[in-house]
Length: 132
Image (tube, rainbow, N blue to C red; front, side):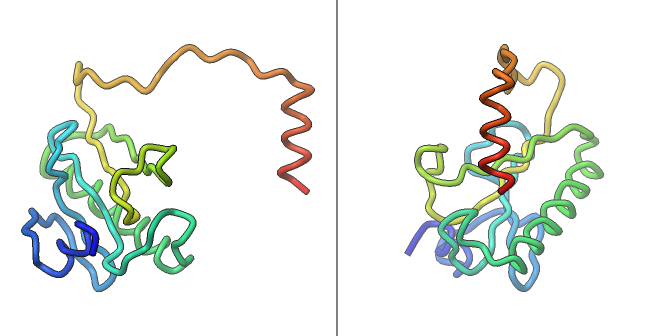
């Protein structure tokens, strides 16, 4: 049984922020920023692609609710929402989870790096492959 399933089953304690019949939100034990929270489905789903549309919707709703709770309680208005889906994407716990990262002035986190414009011919080929 995975660590998040153990949390859902109350085998491992957590600091719950929000809970519905199908979702659970709790403070991440590795606080990247103050208030870093995880939103998970209570039922085990490996990753993003294994979610059902209904559960995905409930997770999105819970994520919005928790973001508003953090805004109210911590006075923060900037957030990153992050999901690592699959090991190559950095997923460490094989149970879907959405990270909510409150952002603060000078918090030392940067997701920006120099971007170069795409080759338009390659971009068009990619688009045609995806859009068909």
